[in-house]
Image (cartoon, rainbow, N blue to C red; front, top):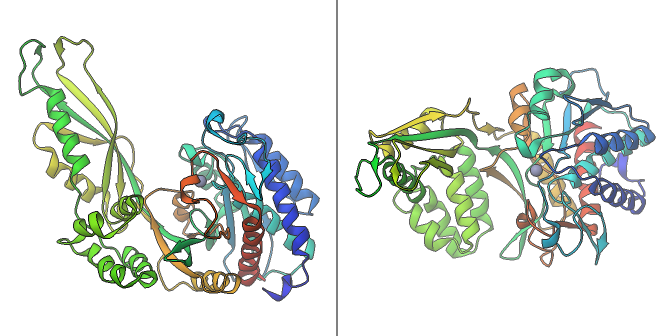
Length: 452
Ligand SMILES: [Zn+2]
């Protein structure tokens, strides 16, 4: 633990962060519509009580973002940004064992939508900023905080808006946010994924045209049939591998954690000839196989289909929307070229809007080693693994300002704790109270080591 934090009463700080998160979980910030303003006002009050003067920045009524800055140093060292989003995805209360917006503790776990994704990080970040302020520890760089709205619906009222309208308030050398920092176990060995890269996005429309006619006389140049054939090819075939240095690093770190069989199999994931076989046979968990397959290549999931209006009329046009994702190391142009090779002459492909490139924090950055040191010191035997995520986070926008982003929202989990990954957007979302308290110590220590 950093010397500045050695005298801290962690029992008290831990109890306070549990209470803070419980209160935050009671605000229903389901997005859409979000309605984050009340939750953000509550956090602003909490910070003021600790002596911090935050700013609330609101793009539209009902939506709000909170930024704060603890000044440190003479500007020579780049600021650190702590980031969390306060909006959550919908919860179907009838499917939960405890109500999703009550913030109740049951059997040592704090329940609520957002306990994992990601009000826990928001609470720990607010607690850390408050703690450093109360302690009056001098900082050698600025520590910034951004609690944002609208991450679950694309960030337009949150990080994207802040980057466009208030870039100076959120500009930083590094950011800590989603996704990572919670313990995983592989063959009994604990590790902490830390996100170093995320894929890009290119949402697409595919359209097919064909001859119209009466439904009673089938024809092969039916637009619905042409589109369906294309969608089936996209859904069943894997696009080519893109083995970026970040993906190699991720696989190498996973390989280190494996037993003998895994050590032999995992490197073959990067081999065009063997990759599919290893994904099918060599990776036991099908969810893990899907995740690895997604980070290794460009992907496009068909998600929306439109065609026809009447059962006995063959329509002249059929359209689908595809959620395209650009592999780290690849590009929009490569994704389009790969999809066109599956499309044939009857299918037209176009972007639904501007694409966003992958986000990458290059290796060799001392902050990654600092975080790995925090992991090892707080959880003996655990290692940090640099991960690549197929999804996207607020890091997409911070990185536009030149910020190097890490997914580090630490929660210490035991092997007996429920499947953490399944609780992102899942039912019965909850966080172990002990794990949250340990997470606060890890986050505060990481911030102190970097900033004090
Ligand atoms: Zn999230």
